[in-house]
Amino acid sequence: MADQTTTTPPAVPDAAAAEGKPAAPKVKTRKPKQRACDEKDPKGKLCAGHLKRWYDYPREIEQLVGKGAEIYRCEFCKVLYRPDPQQQPNSLTIRY
Image (cartoon, rainbow, N blue to C red):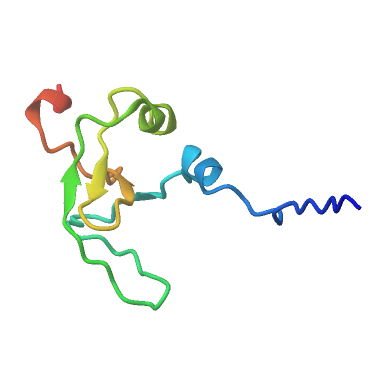
């Protein structure tokens, strides 16, 4: 008798497929004179990472925020921040 038992592995979502399309980053607007991140983790702990100006962002981010946009990124949690609309830009090259 020929025993033909073929088992198929259970349907598990591919980890490679999940890595291929990363989630869109969170984009927030800075509060007046804000210099630290105010994002909270799932436990409710404040990130408080320094917001740094991001000049060389990838094309995916450029499509999200626009070409040549002034954008800031938290050094720890990588949340993106648009500048405060009431505050003038910090660099002289962007003002004029």
